[in-house]
Amino acid sequence: MRPNLKACGQAMMTAVVNAVLALALMLLVEFAISGTFQLAGPYIWAGLLIGLVIFFGQFWRQRHLCRNGQPGHGPTDTY
Image (cartoon, rainbow, N blue to C red; front, side, top):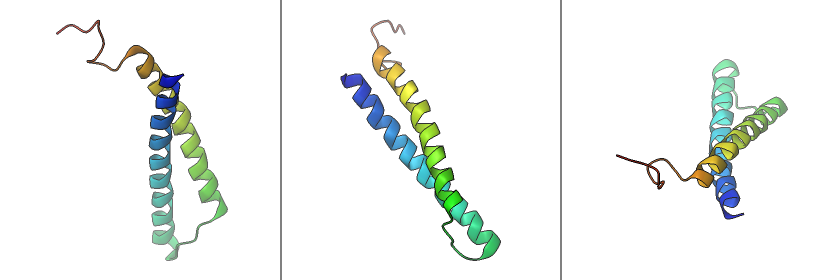
């Protein structure tokens, strides 16, 4: 259970950061086009969708890394 919680936390942080950056980029483009910052509904939905996709992808990746040990730290690594 502990590796899943760790993976979930790391995936959540990555997803939130990337969703906020995507939303900021969309607002910046909106400002460049129209000259005003309008937070429209589609921008929020797009930010949420981006966050969800990144969360699930990162959760799967982080869970795999937490189960098998991170590269360079496992018992089977040889140098």
